[in-house]
Length: 311
Image (cartoon, rainbow, N blue to C red; front, side, top):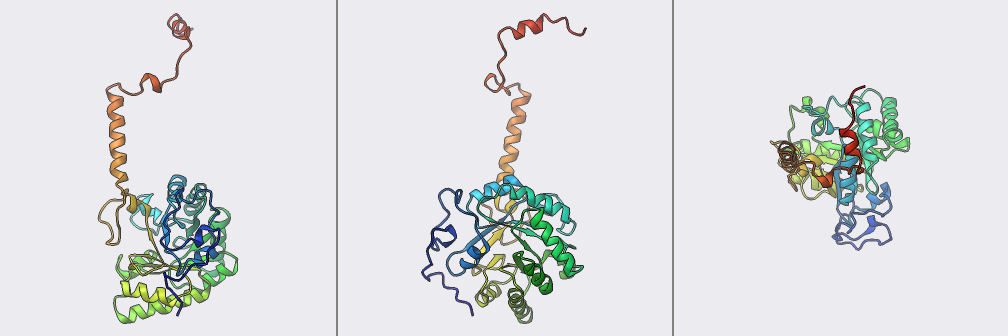
């Protein structure tokens, strides 16, 4: 069983990934620090908790990166969070490449991970490798994530030199098979299967594993059984790190929300209020003011007033 003792003295270096547990977010959000790498993420296990959020474009990636996150995920959840669709299933490879490339423009420190969308890795192993290469080459991702115990695909993508993040528990691309967005691993048989799958995903070459919608005891058992870090989303407090969808975290998504979501801001309401104030200023003639307008040369107004108009 892998050692997972957060009180173990860290191996210190100049890299921000080796800062001791509890050291908090760097004062500048990590700006100016070297980009985090896969070895940095692996070395964090047992030293400090990892932080991941999703991003869908350059501004969301830029501000999240400045917030000091370790990993940014361009998730297929953007189908729901950014494109207004009912599930993640319809997002395409071209859309994922587009959004990933936009997010990459805003990242300086965090490790950028791209989701492999539904249909991009299920057809064949060669196609899975080809699509993973697209996300890295065209989307500028530095790792890819795929759902389920797809061991052959994970092994082949890793063999192609692309870091792989696994994803077990509730896998939204299998929503129809699962009968909805439901907590997984509730009984002993299902929990033991997830534990077995997690070990297999690690052996296949994944460097990180996302655990979604699992009882806390399952998240703890999986985390303690692996050498690679785990990232929880509704999998309890014992995972090596946590992830939330940015729209949920900052208040841009609509209720109902999953049980595990904690709001840290209400940006949706703030955005609405700002637009309402702008509209009010425009309608009463209070915007733009003189200071928000470009000055005219002294003689321009007179010349325009004496213009004969249309020739």
